[in-house]
Image (cartoon, rainbow, N blue to C red; front, side):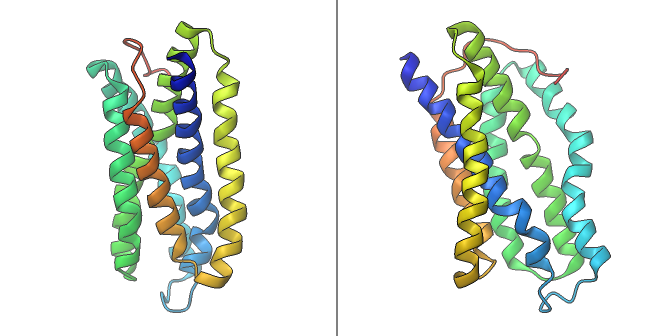
Length: 190
């Protein structure tokens, strides 16, 4: 059981960070396409809104996880919603709609790392597993995604970043279903 859970956490970190590596480094490049007709400041705003909102939204996710005592359930919602909203970027080229999508996307995406860290730290503490052995797979996922998407977007177009990210987060959602919560946790201070 311990090994299965460890593999689930490693895969979850891989998919969460793969999704980020497939999207975030390429987002500004995607929107710089002349078809969008966006100015540099509009592109900057679309790309920056996620990190800015994360400053305010991550504590809200932490408070919700504290109050509900079920960070896994919140992470399931956040991963599924972020995976779906990632694909909605493909539906419009209008600046205000893209900004709205970015805000909604950020609402769910910013919960991934704090909530998976909460689950993983609790698991490693109770099961005496090395946290770094889990988290390393996140770094590998990010690096692999940046490399792979850099290669395939040259041939297939930058729109592939949204499909790769959505698919990674949906796969992460499926992996997360198999992870058992080890008990109540407190995440608001993270």
